[in-house]
Image 1 (tube, rainbow, N blue to C red):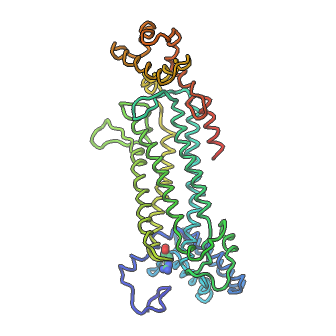
Image 2 (image 1 turned 90 degrees about the horizontal axis):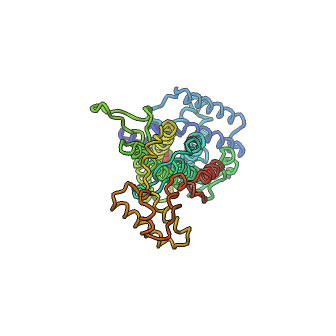
Image 3 (image 1 turned 180 degrees about the vertical axis):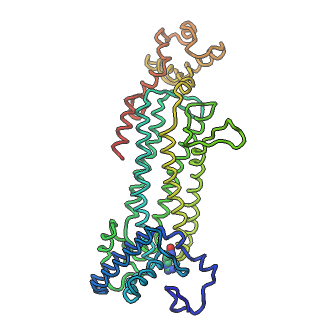
Length: 459
Ligand code: ARG
């Protein structure tokens, strides 16, 4: 006969490769704490139904505490027949407190409600302990740099062509804004995932009338899942978390790509610290932005985790099927990759140095052509017309091989349009151009400080 927990109806042995193929303990051991907590609260629920005596309950809880110590100290000994964290913990409980009592903990419970209870607790705790605090740190570092370096100007780009001057802080603040939205989005997901499947049984519900609200409250859930079939088969929270990770990594990837460009010798706007760069095995002069390239590259990996599991999920009939065990490896990989990426991005931002002169030297007068058009708008000329006039000035300066539109004389300006006056030359000031954009969300100092205050109030 077989030693397996479910071995009663079996006479034959499991094929050895099938055993390995089926086992999830190599990765779901990570949920040991949630599993032990779940069993503690579940058995308290059984005791309320008089399915356990107070004495049995206290022995069970003592045994569960012992098992937790073993996992915490890395001394838990795995048995070859342990299939997953649930069977491993139950087997060990029997060894510690005796099988006659340990054999009662699974009354009315199934691994179907148990495994997904554990996974929801694990996700909630990972968000609270790791992802949310790390995200806050990243946002704070961006906000701090943004405040400290408010005076630095740089070219803003569209189509990667020089467009209009902006503050470096405006760029920093733009990613702080994306990441703050990511933070808020994650809180919403956490709210939705933190509901209890426990007490749903294998699929049909609990035969002893267990108090599911009591179980939910004991485990820190917001409420119970209202349909037992959904309780055991819903993995939307897994997909949603990986979708969140995919979108977050997309933001990280674009952020990294900007910095890759800014760190090239051709741009030279920033220098990465040695801590986040690597060299070349052949070319001694090289300093490569590997941290940024990995941030960009790993965004593909998290998307793959999501896409892979979503593909597994799509054809599964109601309710639990073993396909669903595939939820964990992709989710754990996505969560770890995202967590590490947040930490690396935070390190990169807090240690890079800005090359202020290079940024400001990259500002060119033609980037003020819009401001020149605005000059005439302030004198009552319709913008469509001023846009055309300003374009002519750019073309004329180019024809005369001047270094910029500021080098045309007043006479030359008046020839293009008689409404130009001597004060037009005041337009050619990057600082003023930036400061004029003080409406909400703009790149003027006051508007950036407002953005930063607003972001700070949300984290
Ligand atoms: N290891 C399984 C998982 O992670 C636990 C659930 C097993 N349930 C079952 N009926 N075989 O999904």
